[in-house]
Amino acid sequence: MNTIIAEKDGRPRCRWCGAAPEFLDYHDTEWGFPVDDDRRLFEKICLEGFQSGLSWRTILVKRENFRAAFHDFDFNRIADYTDRDLERLLGNEGIIRHRGKIEAVINNARRAQEMVQREGSLAAFFWKYEPDQSQLAEPQTASTSTLSIALSKELKKQGWKFVGPTTMYAFMQAMGLFNDHVEDCVIRAEVELARQQFQRPRAAIGKR
Image (cartoon, rainbow, N blue to C red; front, side, top):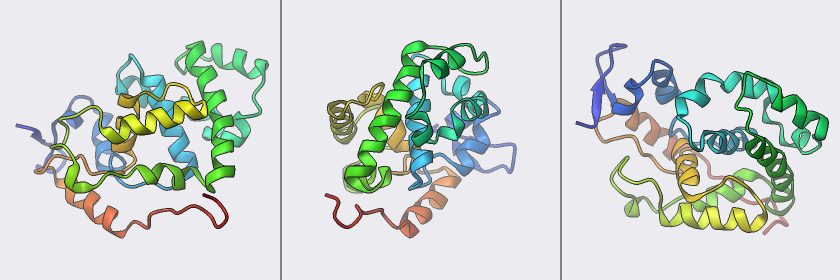
C-alpha cells in the first residue's frame, strides 16, 4: 500500500509522511501546493542542495536555523555575502557546515538576481517547466523526468550549482509544479484544487 492511516484524523495519506513526526504537517500544508513566491522557491532549491547525500528530515528539523543563518533566503542579501559571511556560516552548528553547499547558495543567489533581470521573476522561469499532466509517471514512482533533466541542464548552463536532475525533480514535486500525492491520499484533492485555482506566473513585459 502507498498510504498510511494518520492518527491525526484517521484519514489516508502518502506513506512517507509517517516516517518522522516532522513530516505530517509538512505533507499536509506545504508539499505539492503550488508556489510562486521567489524567496520560497530560492529557499527550496538551496535546501534541496543541502539535502544531497542526506535525509530530508535532517534538513527539515534544521530549516529555521537555515532561515536565520541565511537571512530568510533573501537572495539579494545573500548575493552580497563576503568571505566573512562564509566563515560565519561554516562556524554555525545549527546548519549543515559543508563548504561546497554553502558556497553554492551564495553563487546561486547571484545567479537568481541575473534570472530576475532576464525573466522578471524566478517563478516566471521555473513555471515554464510545469509538465503536461497527461505525461506524468504514477505518483512517487520516479525520481527524475525529461523536464527535471532539462531544468537541471539549463540551470547548470546559467551557472547554478547543486541542481542535478534528481534535486530538480524533488524541487518540482515540492513546489507544486505537478501533484505527486498518491491517488488515495486525502491531501491530493486539496493540492489539485489549489493547482486549479493557481495563476501561473508569466514573464514581465519586456522580458523574454
